[in-house]
Length: 260
Image 1: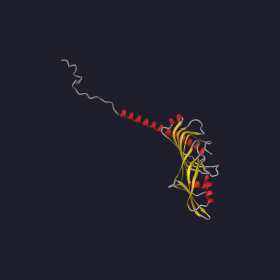
Image 2: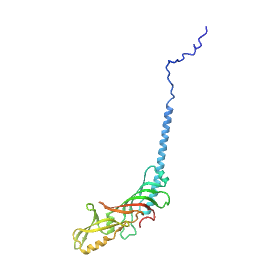
Image 3: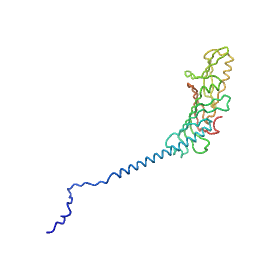
Image 4: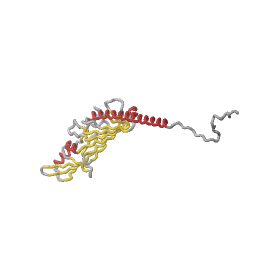
């Protein structure tokens, strides 16, 4: 008797038998995903570092040019806004840059008034072309002028009166005793600060003294070493000094481009 042809082949699954598919191991897939994520993070971090290095170099160069133009003893602080910076540098224009400079001198003046602090916001700053000059299409700036420096420039002890928005000075006269005078402060042409509307608020000021004081305050004080293109728009009395507000279009600063 012959054995059945299928006797040694074991059981074959039929249409009704259950079938369990065999999946490939997932460990390799997860490992590849982790490697890819790590690579992407590494590339992103490297790109960020490169962009920050480019921004730092641009800030350093802008600070150098600004310092040369204004004569500040210390390097100004510069911050290039917006990320990424590399595309902005490639286009030749930075969208916005903030600069803060301190102790801008006022040499070459009979009544020098240094700028204690100058805060500048520049839009559309060009980074190509002449490396000794920097140009911006629109600028807003605020110069802080301390009362101590203002007092030295005028030869009077000046302090602010926030209630009236004016400045006042106390005088000690030989025969009249203490006299307090007050004057308004306003922006004048050519980036000058003018003192107007002199009045006596305490004591008695002789006519001769009033004439001399009016003559002293008649000449506006020139603000010097301000970037070319900035125009003084207003002056505000603050607790410890004056805030002078500037605006400008097509502003340039560099070694020979500031107002003398």
